[in-house]
Figure 1 (cartoon, rainbow, N blue to C red):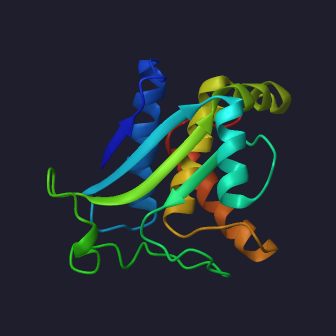
Figure 2: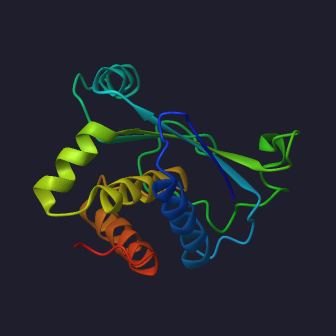
Amino acid sequence: MIINFNKRLFNKKYIEKISSAYDEALKILKVKCKDLEVNISFVSKSEIKKLNDKFRQKDAVTDVLSFPNLLEPGRTNMQLITDKLDKITFASEINPENGTIFVGDICICKSVVFKQAKEYGNTKLREIVYMAVHGLLHLLGYDHMTDDDKAVMREMEEKIMKKVHLERE
């Protein structure tokens, strides 16, 4: 998997742990195609608030936003694409420069995430990786709009985080 990080993330350890978490996620989720591409951007509070307002009609700061490229907008229930993720099904989404399927964009507000880390008793590293995993799961069709969907998503997040050895500290 190719992960494109914006220049605001200069911490090598964050990049390594997010990359490791994504490798583990693909294994746990049984995603056969590994030729995938995701963009991760770290944004300010004002930037994430604008994005949240524009795309979710929520005039509020949030920790992470995901913008799936492979899902239909406005879906009302969880539609996982992990078993359908291949170059035949998504031939129109293949990046001609590198042969990967572009899955989507994730925006993380570091200042909000760092504040949450302190509130939850986690390290900044653990919280950043958790948000990146949360964002990836959204790109792959997981959601938390219903209690059942939320339980499934949380279970996947925790399975992935345990493999990366970043449990709550």
